[in-house]
Length: 435
Image 1 (tube, rainbow, N blue to C red):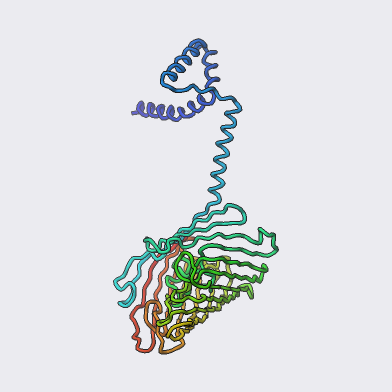
Image 2 (image 1 turned 90 degrees about the horizontal axis):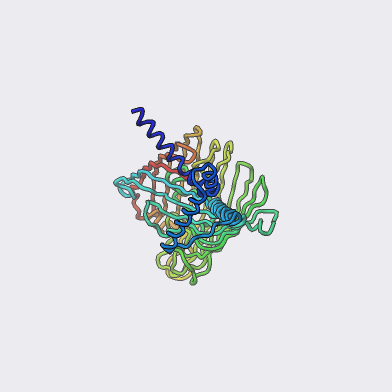
């Protein structure tokens, strides 16, 4: 057995030495031949004869003999290979990949979406970022929620440019061109089961993405004043828009005190004709029944206060001791042509989170959507109602810096003329992560 072990070790050692020997032979074959001739292993005549035989065999096989490369050619070849490798490394360093995902179990009452209980993948995003230079950055994000093909599959696709750096301005100004998330309100930046403290969104859940152009910027360093304005196509769906006026979004934010942040947003869809706007609220984006031309206007005010403010403010990952945030907004769906009545409603929420430890937190939220006309109903969160309220509680365990376990429960309450309350309360147990 010992003999077999020694033989195996020798074979392994020889195999390890072969690549090194071949590498040396490839680069310094002439030097090795001179050493062999000097030691008397072979003669110069034998070497010349062998070369002639190899040349003759190549000629017979139709292979042209290559002239030996000069030292300058070999150096140039090595430099070319190194430049190619450096170029690839630089390109790779400019490409950034990140994403987020969430999966879990949902169970609702009989009128809810998961009355039999269901395993779901409610969140799946993969983002590619490429920075060709120090001013521009290209962002492309893919949407693979529930691990199925989504419409649109291309969630975002835009180019960010540091305008202030290009023009050497003393304050920050950035531009964005392409398909992007509309900067309206605050929940819109965390209305997903990964970044939200709860597994669910508020009843209002204002959200929208559109193709267009945006300018944004900031003034100050301590009490920062932020602003953003955008002009986009306005109508829902991706692609060109040639039939309706463009929509407008404007937003101003300010750190009134270090732990106190406030913002105000305004949205105008422009005349939509019979189309739906990109900006939805409570899932409602359809035109009022009987309208042939309409326009949606919205405004929202937000406030957030952090206790023992931390450095990370993304709700689910926030390292403040606690925070509370409020939102209130109004929507006006103005009918320009047709027989439908105008549709106006208010919405809002109050949300609080307390970090019991660095790992464990508890959170609660109350949210509401309320149509002003008590006799008007609409499909709010897929439920026909005049008023929709949601009471949400939850807890989270930060398994790691990137992964969180979340458990939550939602009580949903609907009301309105001739509307029966639907039994659609929901239990959610998920794991979410980002990379």
